[in-house]
Amino acid sequence: MPRLFVAIRPPLDVIDRLIDTMEGIENARWQDEEQLHLTLAFAGEVEHGEAEDLVAALAAVRFDRFDLAISGVGHFEHRGRVTAIWARVAESEALGALQRRVARACESVGIELEHRRFTPHVTLARFSRPAPEVPDWLARHARLHCAQFTVDHFALLSSRLSHSGSIYEEIARFGHQSGR
Image (cartoon, rainbow, N blue to C red; front, side, top):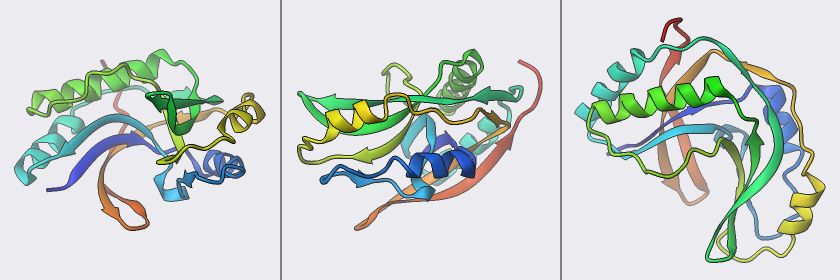
């Protein structure tokens, strides 16, 4: 069964800017260029028939083009230990609306999504061991900013785990369609 998620991939100039920040933490598992994305919904393992239904449901999602920007950095932690660092995606009403529509499309075909608050971000690195350099890295990149970019599509991707990290494959791409 494929592990599926719905995401927005930033354009290459933004990806290049993010890659420029990816250094200076010894225990970091830095994402590569192909792994940089903004997750809208993580569906998890999905049966083949359910995946086909999901493609159809996502194709019906309507949204207008909108602009996004990267502004700052942050981190996730579990039990006081940093598990990931990320680039913050600036608040956007249009992004929130698209994320809710994508979540409803997933749920409409019986996919149970996680119920945590949507925090728009692009993961830069993951950690399985403590990394004492994280606070310095966060301070150094606190003012990270990338030029605005226009979102005119999102994609359904599959994730396959390998010994070198996750490998993503685009299953389907969905362009903007006006209307709510």
